[in-house]
Length: 250
Image 1: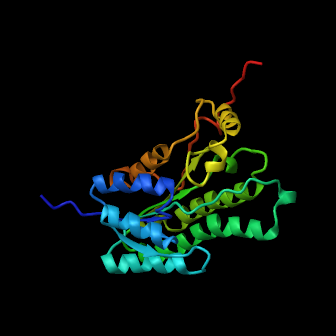
Image 2: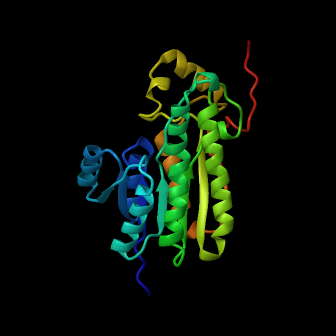
Image 3: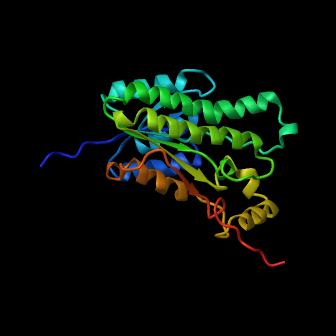
């Protein structure tokens, strides 16, 4: 019987809450995981804790992500999966959002994903593999004060569908996970405040906000080879936020 091939998976934004939750799940399944991020100190600590290779990158620098993907593929002689957990949150109405703030949201969320597509198209088009992006329920439904992030994440979803069509013959698959509010370091200001947390719970029909493991478990499923009959999909993991209307008692 042929020996099972070790899958090489690159997690971009690995030091974030979802990336940290995803890492041990993939290691338990035998993946060789490479961690990508911009915070050198946090990246080094995480790499040492889990005995994984890490690679420094800066999503603000054009080409940084694309170069990192190429380097990982070359050094490991293969790259099977890329998960882009790089992201940000900006909650402001459009008229209060500075052009520089909007540009930053686009660069962090949309531009980083576009660079991933460019990178995997070069590094993985001969072997195929799974690419997973993160979006938001705000890309599907209108939520107040989410104009910037909704625009960026809607762009990520459109990008993934188009890339899935462009590269389908190469075996590259592109899928998107679209959470509601998740208890992460990035969203700490929203869930640490009890009033804000109560309002957020009420928005989600299942009555709670998400946890990093809710997102990481689906990403883990998407990068496993046996689940390879799925591409160009946007999957909501949002407690029903984007699909269910509940009537609250007054």
